[in-house]
Image 1 (tube, helix red, strand yellow):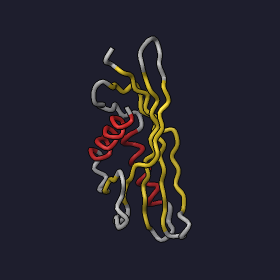
Image 2 (spheres, helix red, strand yellow; image 1 turned 180 degrees about the vertical axis):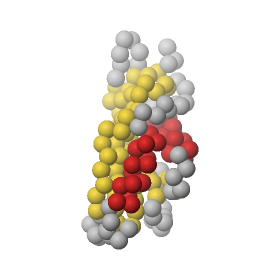
Image 3 (cartoon, helix red, strand yellow; image 1 turned 30 degrees about the vertical axis):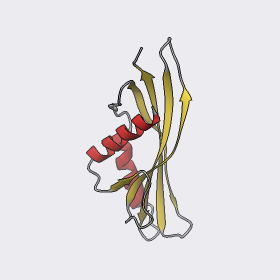
Image 4 (cartoon, helix red, strand yellow; image 1 turned 60 degrees about the horizontal axis):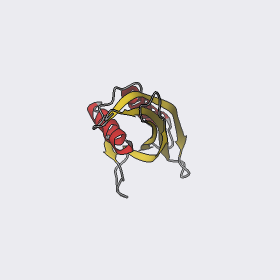
Length: 130
């Protein structure tokens, strides 16, 4: 389910037309600002004899705005608006029960120039294959 959720989140972010490149594995020379996918985890969540999973994926937004957090926070908020409560279209056999941003934060990078926005998105999915 994790790869289906990742693909669906990518589609939602692309559809939001944020004007930022989105990478699963950004190249070392990627121009900032950009969005990347970070760590993920999955916890089984079976209910009423329906197999399910709770998938959490980190979405990162990177910017270099001379130490200013606000531009990266604004981009983070745009991603939040696009994905929170989104009705994700998942590949079979998965169906999205709900999609929620459970944490959103922005921090300054150690170099004092770059900023890093982080969203943790948790998606509850169920297996519809019966």
